[in-house]
Length: 103
Image (cartoon, rainbow, N blue to C red; front, side, top):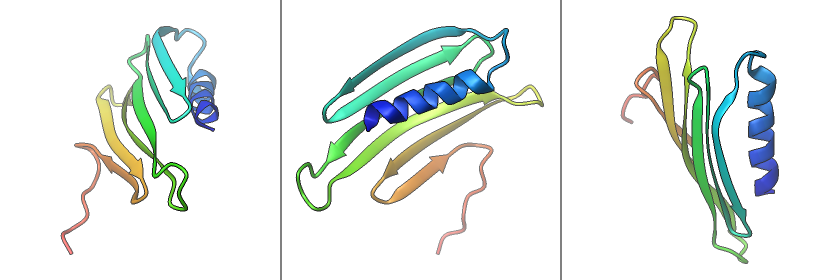
């Protein structure tokens, strides 16, 4: 499952990238209870993530991922999103993202 997630993410980047963009750096490690990857393209895109299984073998088994991605937008600025995705959902943070008011 983890391999599939990493493969799909890299495949999506490859499809979205123009033909003149190349992969500058790409590293990955997939194990039975976790994964990590780190890549960068020549047009300034970057992504990295690390995930681990939590509560292995229990009814509450889950995958917890911590990572970030950056891209250069049409306005020329580089935007970065740091995130956590775990049993509490996807939790992105970035200077360009709106923040919900305190409840």
